[in-house]
Length: 198
Image (cartoon, rainbow, N blue to C red; front, side, top):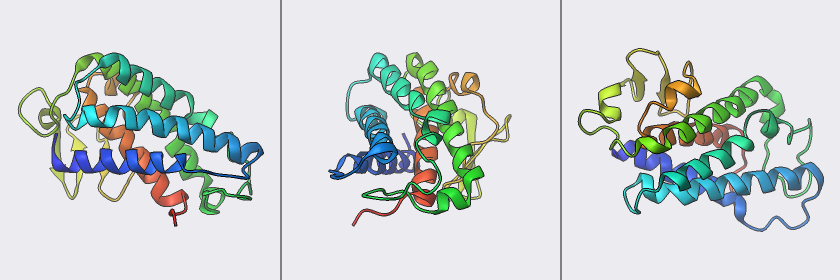
């Protein structure tokens, strides 16, 4: 896996895992979404070492992690954010409601990439950026981001969203590529819509 992918994966796993710290006093929707984020963070953290080549690859673990992310993404994720629900220990920024369309798009993209990751679990690792058959064969470096030759999907280093790829298409990739896309969406959402930890 190349350095960029490792960095994105580590950042997403760390950011999601950061939601695990104690949120005493959370109630209602805020507590519910913290639990959902905790489950997604645990899922990302469980597979990140495999994607970095630091643990043996287990497709069943990847599949289960992807299912946990997908079930907490999309409409399930946006339902946890009724307007103005930033009371208590919430890390949600007002930007969520100021740019709801982007937030909702990222939630939906997270569901698609997680479903793609689930489908890609049996594909194993492709060593992103290395040799034929891996992501290097499918993607080229352009302007600080990665663009697929056939789909126009762009994953910018600025945390831009994944566009134009279905879960079925992502499921054809090596699992580390699908994981990197999922991590990219997580990072983009956290960058724009989550308060930094103190």
